[in-house]
Image 1 (cartoon, helix red, strand yellow):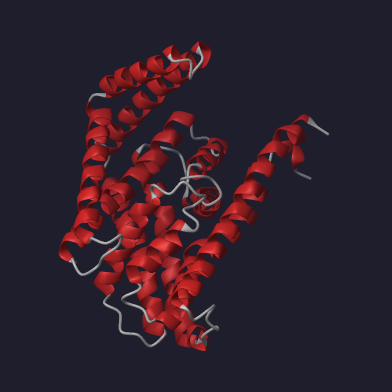
Image 2 (spheres, rainbow, N blue to C red; image 1 turned 45 degrees about the horizontal axis):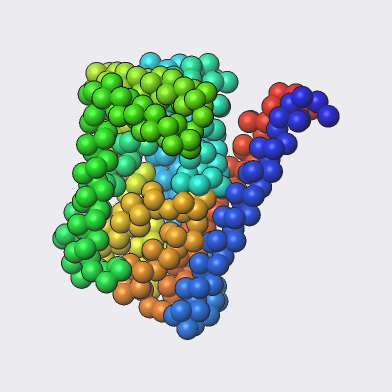
Amino acid sequence: MTKDERTAAPGRVRFLIGAVAFLVLSGAALWAIAAFVGDGMPPFDPRLVTPRAVALIGLFLLVYFVADGLRLYFVLRALDAPVTVGQIAPLVFVNLFFSNITPMATGGGFAQIWYLQRCGVGIGLSAAATTIRTILAMLVIFIAAPLFLVAAPEVEIAGSSGALANTIAAVIAAYMAGFLVLLLRPAWMVAFCDRVLLVLERVHLLGQERRTAWSAAMKREARSFSDGFRRFLSSALHLSIAAVLATLTFLLTLFAMPALLMALLGLEPDWLTVIGTLSVVTFLMYFAPTPGGAGFSELAFAGLMAGQIGEGQLVLVIFAWRLLTIYLGMAIGGVVSFRILRPQGLRT
């Protein structure tokens, strides 16, 4: 066994475990929802594969995947990274694959940074670009979710939409405060985190060597992020605007997909309500510890959308929504990742 093979083997095992966990949790959530509504797993509805349905779904998917790639491309171009659209295209599916087999979607960014290095983009620039791309989406979602809950009090989850809105508002305030401190005063954030690490070391939860390494990495990444975001904001205005518009298009298509499926199944969805509901579901998924939010996303969707979809079609819409926006991209991403990310020594 070569050195590259020995290095790659543990990674393949972890990815396999993550993929299996994703599939098991997703299947268990769908089974639980079907059992709860009492109708069992619904039969396939042929209305979803009529020529008109296939054309509309295909158009949505095309916009969804293209916008996903362009939002990273425009961020990279704003940072003067030497990339082409063709180089970015595989990253759409690489990100989908790794984000959904790692807890809290942490793997997608690392995989993209690794790939961008092969395209001649430095680690610091790649990390800044992928972080900015994520931050832009988070800002949109973190604004849209509480606004929807305030504007649509009839949508309830966990007993009270008012309580949920207050909780989300508090979390958003904390995130925004941390984001602004990291952007404007990164030294403050580093100093605070250094103190936390020091306390962990004093209570023997962290060794001195690891604390020193984490502290150095944190200072480096905080400086890189702050510099990268400022560089993005001071870049050519048309590139920054293009990145924001691509992000909005990507999220709008993602959130509107269930409404399209409902319309194809003969329902009359309120598109704005569905889009707002999906913004809340996506917000909640940021805090799901499972790979890609598997299980949690299906249950959150069912909890928020049960009043808008008939019991006989709820599970079908959830499955079709996840199949088109996640499972399909993951399947493509698994093939693409195997071809472009495996070590050079493993290639034939």
